[in-house]
Length: 227
Image (tube, rainbow, N blue to C red; front, side, top):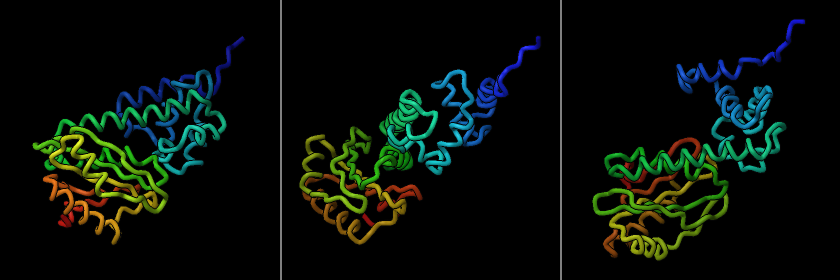
């Protein structure tokens, strides 16, 4: 009797081969998710699960920004799969952090922006982060110092400057997210930046930039000549 194999027999191998040859460009978004899920879900056709994830969250990025409990609301996603998805996001964040720390923040601003967008993309409330620089403008550390609501966070200049001094920072980059997705600076953002710049200057700490990140891009005060 002829042995009948499931319709997806060999499909996982073909996905891996396509990825080996062309990387992510060789696969559609759902195929990338599908390939990832093959490492957490054995002996099952995971294409429907991958497509369900994209349907629920709307985009590839939103899948990785979702909480573990939200991921498990999708049929076929258990604790192991949910943790794997979040693990990939955390590894990417650490990778970008390492790249950022090896470069001059002034000559390689893109590395700071890439890190900030990934680090803050999973927050549903507005979050304020400070990146600390040494005298050579190299990143020495970073810290999320405030998490607010969906439309704002209260920032105390004294706390920002005290944290910079505790980190022996010669300069700082201010970063916050706009959960709405639109990174354009508001009037309050501009006023806060001027205040922090003036207070920091008095304490001999440079505000190198203030970056606002959102799903639709980023806004840099330094690039716009607002510092």
